[in-house]
Length: 125
Image 1 (cartoon, helix red, strand yellow):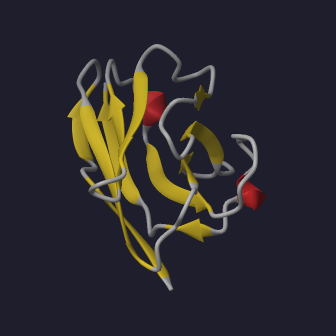
Image 2: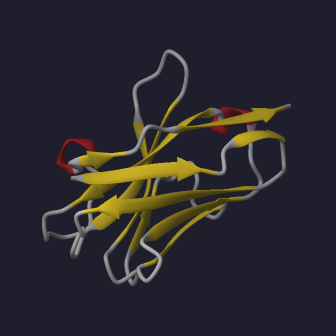
Image 3: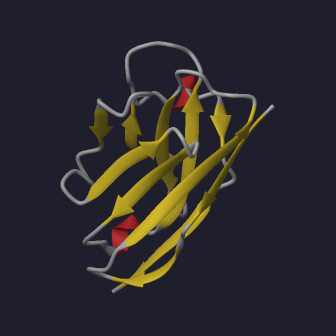
């Protein structure tokens, strides 16, 4: 069994920063790629960022490119999402996800087979 637990969400003013963490536990994920997705009220969940097992390859949604940075510390079994220059439209529940299959880095939600419970991020104007 694999557990993913997000932390670091909260309320911040526009232009501010937050860092989300995703700690994994349970069965080792091996060479899993990790991703962050978000779901705003009344909207479908969308891809935010992904990172390869080694951390050498990253992928970002256009809406966050240049403002968000995904990283990982495999020794700590933790993935991070540093969010800078936050905008009210970044308000959403942010989910951490893992893809336990070895394949090229991707942003396909259906291929991520482990998910966290989500962390609320609220950006006020």
